[in-house]
Every structure is written in C-alpha cells, then in structure tokens.
Length: 328
Ligand code: G3H
Ligand code: 13P
Ligand code: NA
Ligand code: ZN
Image 1: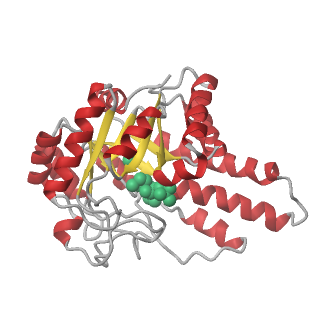
Image 2: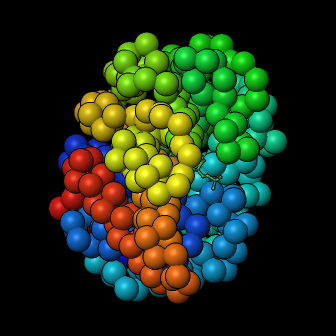
C-alpha cells in the first residue's frame, strides 16, 4: 500500500529503525527494490529525481508505482520526489501520485547557487503549507552538500553547488535547524555533514574530520522529534568498485559512507537514508560482466536480469543493516 513519508518515519522513530530511500529511473530498478522489500518484509521509500521524471515520464512513473503496489500490496511504499527545486516541481509530482516531496531550498532554482535563509525558509514553508492541505509530506534541506576535504559542492553529476563552500555552509548549524523546522513545519529535515552525491565522496576511509556525524547528534539533541535525512549515503563498496574495474570500467579508488556511521546516525534520529550510487554501481557491474564474458549476447534481459539481482541484493542488505527488515 502507498503511505506518506510522515506515516512511515513516525513508525520508524517509534521502533528505532531507518528507511533507505532508493532512487529509480526505470522498471528494473522499481522491481529490484520491491523484490528486496518483499524478501525481508520491509517498508521502503522509492524516490525519483527531476532527472528521473524527465527520463521516464511522469505518466510512466505513476503507472509503475501503481503497478508495484498492486504486485506487492502488503509492502508499505512511500513514493517521494527527490530534490524538488521549486514549488511547481513539487506540485506536479503530487499530481503524478507522489505521497511525499522534497523541497530542496538549500540551493536556488538553478540547482547551483546556495539558497540564502530567506529563500530557503520562504519556499519550503510555501510548499509545506500547500502539500499538507492534501496530506502530502515534505522534506526540507538546511546546509549544502559538499566535501569537507576540498570545500567543493557536489557538482560531479551536473547538479549541486558551484565553487568553494565554507564549513559554515557545509555543516548544518543545529540552532538554525531548530529555527528552520519551527518556521517551515517540514516533516523531515535533510542535513549537511560532509557527504556528497555520487561515487567520489572521500579520498580515504572517512573519520570525524570529513564525516561530521557529531553534527547529527547535536541536532538530534535539540530536535529529538524531528526525522533527519542523510543524503549522499551510498557506501560505495569496494567489491562493487572492483567488479566494475575488473570488467573494463575505469573508476578511480574512492570511499563512501560506512554503514556503521549510518547506523550511528539511526541511533540519533536519522530516519531516511538516500541511496542511488550503490545501486547504479551494482547494476553496472553486472552489465559489464555479462557483456564482457558473453560478447555475443544481445538480449537485454540477459544483462538486466543479473543487474536487477545485484540491485536487489544491495537493497536487501541495506534494509537489514538499517533495521527496516521485518517492519512491514
Ligand atoms: O540527487 C542525486 C540522485 O542520485 C539523483 O540523481 O539527478 O542524476 O537522477 P539524478
Ligand atoms: P548517493 O549518490 O550517495 O547514492 O546519494 C543519493 C542521494 O542523496 C539522492 O538524493
Ligand atoms: Na529527497
Ligand atoms: Zn540527495
């Protein structure tokens, strides 16, 4: 059944677990996520970015979401808009059947310029007011994602802040978080503490200097009832890097967010954990493997099936690690 982010995260808070939010762009990813949720009896968040909506078409996404909830009626699914950049994008997502939207006012509409306080509070509050009239949940974001190592915003894949950012911008200020939540009435708050989108998050296994989990603990102390969201939370596992590189890929060595750090976050109010890159890598590794080992193959099912299985495996693992398993 389809549920809102508020319903799901309230339950998660009550029972002390986190919920991975997996990005989708196509049928294979939607089916892979649902197979995982079904296998471990977990609720799940499926999210689509603006790019996903352009790629797949809102009508296709709408029917795909209807289809997966019909195939797996016993699995609670929240369908969420990832990184909405203005009120209109959020409203059209709601029209397409999303039960939750992210209004990301940490960046201006261009997706590059950091949004100032007045802009972020203003646009987020507006989206919350309209969405709540229809029972739709809203995630806001305070603080700009980017690397504490380099000070750079995460524009690796074409979106994210441009240029050099200060630690002030890269780390959510706990007092401002309190004020932001009070002023906007968001259902969930995404915070910045050193993660960034994509595969290239850290140049070494992160410690407290470059992954500031203590910021989460401080925010949770001041906002014990707020559902916190971690973006850029792929772990970029070594074995997935190795498979890609073993079969002709060229990914330089990199580090993601260790699962044990996410688990520490879940113990301090983190309820939604965004993961896209790990699933992209899981699928791509298998596609490379099949096409390398069987160069005569040209039936897409021959490589998409193993790709889906690798994604299901990854999703199952995260649902177990975040204690979502068994909570459907
Ligand atoms: O925000 C990042 C998510 O991984 C979605 O990425 O905008 O390329 O679909 P995307
Ligand atoms: P990753 O790139 O770490 O998977 O993060 C995804 C994300 O935050 C989507 O909003
Ligand atoms: Na989001
Ligand atoms: Zn994100």
